[in-house]
Image 1 (tube, rainbow, N blue to C red):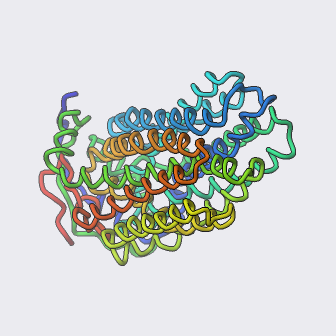
Image 2 (cartoon, one colour):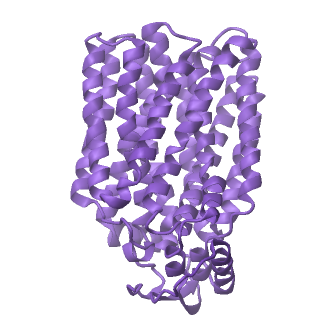
Image 3 (cartoon, helix red, strand yellow):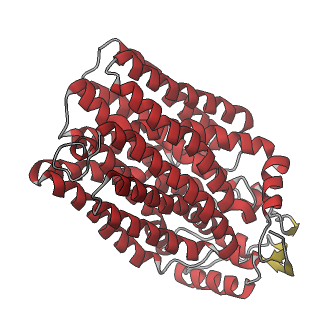
Length: 479
């Protein structure tokens, strides 16, 4: 696709957004955009914890537990990877707001259709489409959040929002307990998916009030609309706001070609590309494997089929409290030390867990406690992968960069992870499952070492300071 220059504009929009104090308006952004990860957590956890129930006679689906934990999980992730790339391209071309509405609608439709599944192929098809919508959300939402949140808060807010996935995971895990025990086999799992639709509709109502990214608008020839949005935000925030000195001049364009995007990532920022891939592959293998496979572990080794939600809820809460408590340190201590520490630290804890499991030293309760500790640390690191790739590449390629790293990293770890993990767990040999743990641990440690060497010090800096826009005539001048 060719690039078409449509004008030149000098703007202070980025500096005006970055100097804003935290306000109720910013909380509206967090609620309207960030709560979608709760949906993702709800989706993944419901399927993982319902895997045994879906495989029972009378469920309405002739499907095995391994197919739910392996095939359906891999198709969901494959859909997410495809959706990220497709909608990521559309997000950079047509704007953040249009796409974060469209992707949520895709999710709602596919989830509703999943609830009416009557055959494994129908179930698989709509799990793919559900992932397709969620994948598009990752590109559109992370782009919008980073471009609307002030730079001094960006790290902790981005990490907390991505970590909110685990609130949905905890809710989904607890939700499955009464659905498994109090409702007929062929009804409970359908109700679970239906509740996801209800939550999604509530998010859609809030999201309608979130504006388009002013950063995207002024680059795409809509500087007047960008100025009006920023002025409205300033009125809502209130107080005495100093006029920033930093400004930048932009050659406005309708679109950025694929060749320019590829050149940016491979030729201009090759080290950052290696960094992004390392972080995503490490966390994707670990998280997709354990998220989709934990109920299978409890069922295979500890014969727990109907109360898996209680165990997973504990893990999910540990995952949420990690970003909540550690997130502020990514803005104060800094990106490089915190990202490397969370990746290497969680990998080391997981190696210990793998060894204990192989020795037969763990019960369902103590295994859950070990995983809670591992994922308390790993969750903040995994969230920082999204933060990293959303802020270290130029504005014009932000959504596509997020989509690329999500798709490649998740494709390698998220598709291979569940398939490998399900096969190793199904053998019933503790050493095989410990091997799966160890693979995930090794990839996390390796990614942490890459961060130590190639990490970018992006804390408390404006996005344009971290990566100059491709359309810039001159880079942002510090105030």
